[in-house]
Length: 343
Image 1 (tube, one colour):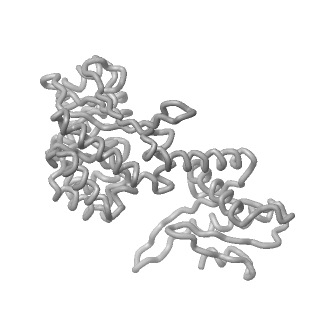
Image 2 (cartoon, one colour):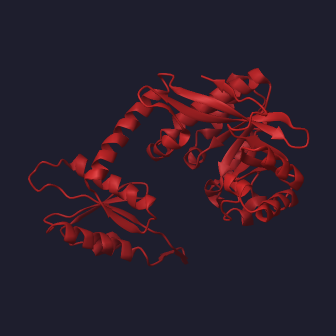
């Protein structure tokens, strides 16, 4: 209703799916009028919504694409261009609009190519799973590993997860990719007789098939459930996902809160979730020692084990041990324990 109030009676408002809507405005007198409509939409969504007697605040990100006006722009291309502009608006802070331009067109074409290539990566065996060691700080022994996925791209070489996981998350490819990593990690952990941690994205956690995927990966890999730890980011831990977390915990796997210290939204409900470990965010490990000490103490007060992420130096290891941190996950720069690799 708000979208319809922002446009003219002859314009078309449609819901594409999920929380995405499209507005088709015909006979627009150029870029300035299109921008004015987009700004009206952003402004209208600034006011709260009344839902079941409560105020709910949301923001909107708007992408604007203009047709050539000469019949050379297809409907599919127009929606694709607006979609690309919308994602740029999200990346630049939300509650704003962005206009599609030539730079975004090149980016959209590259994104489409990358998505097509990523869909082929699993059947072609191009994904690589790297295993980073976790040390028990009291004994300096390697007690577990974390699985990290990389992509051996046929033209671009070895890509880090940050180069393709956001795209996988947006397109839903993360479901198949995540299942692949789970199966690889469980099989490798069974061969090495060592516990393994695997990151689970928000989209995976919301997928109803995740418990089945985890159970199948454990069964087929021959790994005991307590040897698998699933790491979930703070943003994915909400009241709505508590049921999914409990279902995973019922399988016997361990659950960890990733990026601990990067935000505080989960602290009020931390006792409500079946979480056994917290992974201290890398920025916290490298940051203020007093903040680091406070977070370690807080986690221990809640009965949670602590794992420091991305430890790169012997000095960091010594400081973490002095603070009573339980484990340290080593980065590539620490030769204390070699990383395992599996294709």
